[in-house]
Amino acid sequence: MISNWIKNKSERKLIYIALAISIIIFVIAGWKVSHRTELLTNMGPHIQNGIQHGFHKINPLKMYAKDKGSLGRIGVFAAFVLFPLYFLIRFKKLNDKKQFKKFLGKLLKWCKLIHVPISLITFALITVHSVIMTFFEWKTDAVYISGVITYLLLLPLGIFGFLRYKRKDKNWHYYLSFAVVISMLIHTFV
Image (tube, rainbow, N blue to C red; front, side, top):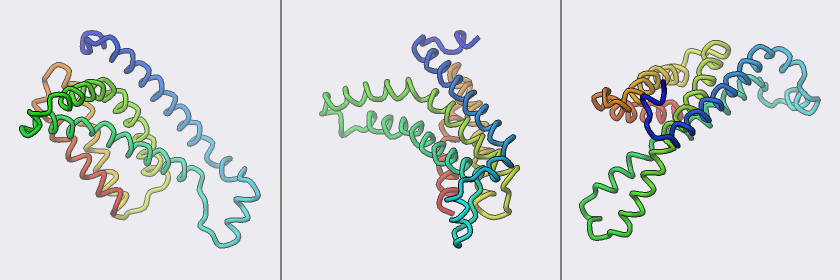
């Protein structure tokens, strides 16, 4: 089925690897969520002493979710790197620099090859972060609400990205990517 959509064999192989990594991320997250009470009771004495001495209370599930959110943020910006490269390659003042444009073309080709695998892994990381923070750690404040908005923008971005292979997205993937990056920045710095 995927071979009908994605013609490039090496890109398909990378997508299968990314899907396997995403499934592993979901399985580990499911295990962490199902064993969240054991994670709290089996903390080492050095961590428990830290809690007693006035440090913030440590919740292993919340720390796990925040780590996945940070990795997901890095993935979003890694997937977004295509747009500055497209802009640079079309920049009129660089027409004189053929060698540099040739280098940018090769870099852009490589970035296009890994864009979808990075996006799939990033989607898995952000989904884990969103589910844990929404259903197990919810607080009604600007950070959580902006996170939900970002995730709700990320869902159609993935769908339109998949439709991009058949050129059926009418550039919605392009516009939504800017909205996701802006809302991700708001979520990060609020």
